[in-house]
Length: 290
Image (cartoon, rainbow, N blue to C red):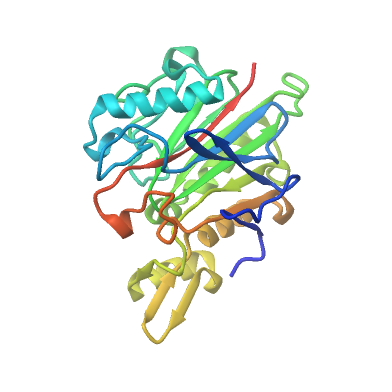
């Protein structure tokens, strides 16, 4: 598999100083990314600690899965309360497995998708912003969360941070969502690709994600043979390795790409569509501090 720095998590292996830290915010369990650009906060959520009932128990952050809307609102409010955020400023798009990445560059659209599935960003599988106090929330249940951070070096905005959150599902990865996010940051803010840092969150691994030869061939052609595991039972795909390969192909440096290696299907602390079918969604949330 990939040679990217992977942090094998859950169970006390991660120690202080590592790129990811498990934080227990009773009743929530979150993972903080420690290598983000100065002024940027990045967290990956897990399943426990929310208000949703089965089969969405408990910290379901997605409206689109037919959970009770009020429960999702409570879950998002709880998450925001422990992170010191205003839930009304959460910006959350309608994710459609595309390569569509947009800029959140005005206050008018900040908070779109906070309280219902309806969003001004539709379809949208990546958001980039340099706005302060404008947290971006995406949700997942096997697809790879990718968070990009960087710092503007252009004299007009020198030292100002930028953050992006991407929904890197199989279809979106094949369509180029990672390259689209990296290019939008680089082109908009004149940030070199090699200075961008990426965190790849929990996603389904080759241990659990069996695919057909047609999909395997497509992903191998795009991302190389290391994203696949072949054995006597078939072909298996690793979503994190696909995301990592896409990041390197987009110009990021190997030393700036980190993966929190948790398989969402193996670990029931996370939601998994492949494992459970009808289920909730955990999240990736990132923002720039004021």
